[in-house]
Length: 234
Image (cartoon, rainbow, N blue to C red; front, top):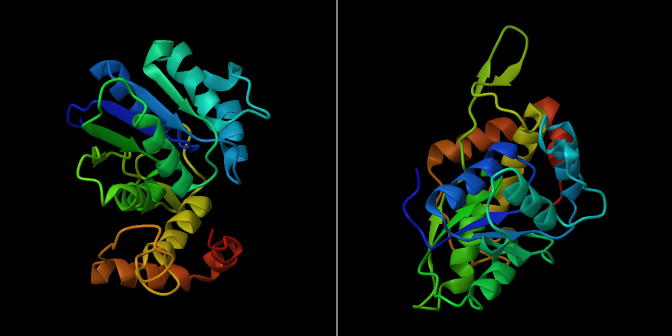
């Protein structure tokens, strides 16, 4: 369970256990839930996840921003009061999630000292590095606490690779691996990455040698190559 905080920030995504985790924290700690997400290139995945959910499928999705959809979940199913839900519905990427969320926090009546940031686990590291990059020069910025809601694990069965901890509303395994593998080049601090030596979107991120090796193994897997290459750097 995360530390006590002043606010939860949920970055729009389509991973139901992550969404539920953010709502649960806000409800249990009785703190504001800031939801960030407009309509972007992955919004249709949220529409699909909602349509397949046994309870949330009653929520209207088409043409709506991610934040407004997730706000309906927070209020209708987690009973979080409207006044405790702060909506940022213009962002279309990770950088805007951070920038626009910080701007909204700055408008809060009471200063937010500590915020728990919840995101799709495959993007959690980059999201935290982005928030820290945006506020690195501000000594009064909130303390950002990372909490992806759950940690996915893969294993082998007789026929294929599966999630060891299967939950309602996860990615297909192929998409999960594609997303995960596509994150490492973004996190790199080189001329092609998002770190200070590259696009300067995020703070420097250290990589253990075993992570680099695992990435190389996945990157050269014939089944994944097409999926990975189709996901260009954004």
